[in-house]
Image (cartoon, rainbow, N blue to C red; front, side):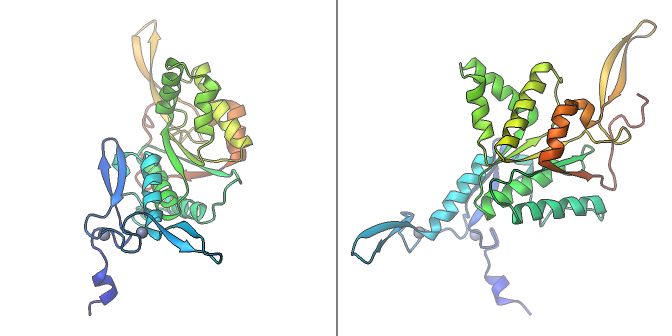
Length: 288
Ligand SMILES: [Zn+2]
Ligand SMILES: [Zn+2]
């Protein structure tokens, strides 16, 4: 009863010719070690010569160079190593309608993507619901399956990258230019941080620029639109009677990033709330 086509597929890569491993902090793609062999068409050079009607020889890319290109896109995407295996196919919706809808929205987004429209996605929901796994699947689909450049940035590491840029003598606009020209940008953990004036200014600048340049941006955030489901941040508050005491501070996304940025986000992204059957809201059980 064995299907000969299935039997002949490479067990390691399913004939994609690419395997994904973890290297350092990131997911890393390379040629499949089981089935990769030097390309017979081009002897591994990556291009072929074709003679045109006037007898001139032109170099044209060989099919195998497409694989190399997609591998390099995936490796520049900097997907967290933890999610090296994330795909739409193995995303667990746990029988939850909101996760099913989030998965469908994500895969429709990559299927129907065309450059220059600028519309992105914003996934909101509690810790552990699968937001980062889902955006990692989006990045994998864009880079490996569709050849579209994309990049993952955790919000707070994006901020420290900008600070490092300053230290190296780069101007703010030079640093932001690099971020704003990325075709598909994922900003993970939007709203995380100290919410300082500087952080809000930088976020405002990134959001506005990408909006104006019609570049698609995908966000994840633990902050939602409702006080009942948004992230509760533990904060230390000094009290005359008890001294230092931990309290849970709750802010909605709009309170977290302020109205101006929130309105921009609404305009440039479809908001998708992910709930999940076993969703835990940190601090939910504690009073504000
Ligand atoms: Zn293989
Ligand atoms: Zn080739």
